Each structure stands twice: as structure tokens, then as C-alpha cells.
Image (cartoon, rainbow, N blue to C red; front, side, top):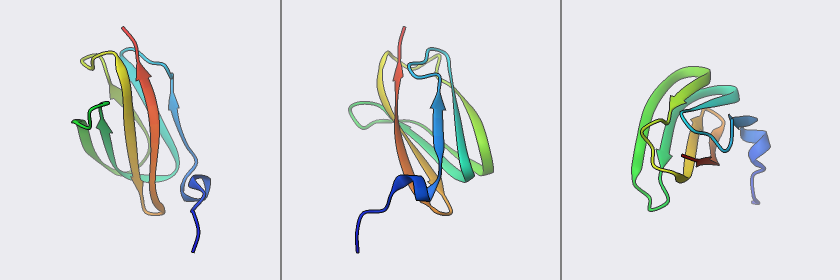
Length: 86
């Protein structure tokens, strides 16, 4: 028992952060699914990745604020925060 170190699940990165129109998500292990939720918990994006290690999200329609990006991999789930500015 214990707390899993997120870095053992997957080395992930979101950039730029803060962002405006696009966010690139990279992972050291293939991603299966991405889910983006806003600060009130509404899902604003969900997509199957089919073993991609890099994906670009178009965030131009997102309102300014803090979003959580849940990255689902074969090794587990990592959640990262990204700030969208306008």
C-alpha cells in the first residue's frame, strides 16, 4: 500500500502553460484518452488517443481559467493543471 508517484506512471508535460489557443500534451508512455474539465467540473473535451505520445489541443474556444487535463495511459492516470488566458 502507498501513494503512487505520478512520475512512475508517465512523464507528462503540458506546454505552453499558461496557454491561449493551443496546448501540447506529451507523455513518456502512450496515451489512451484525454479528458479536460473546467474549474466547475464540466467536461469540455474528451478524446481517444490511440497510443499517441503527443497531441495538440485547440483551446481557442475555452474561457479564461484553470482546467484539469486527465491523461489516461496503460500505466495509470495522471492529472495536470493548465491555465488558459485571454
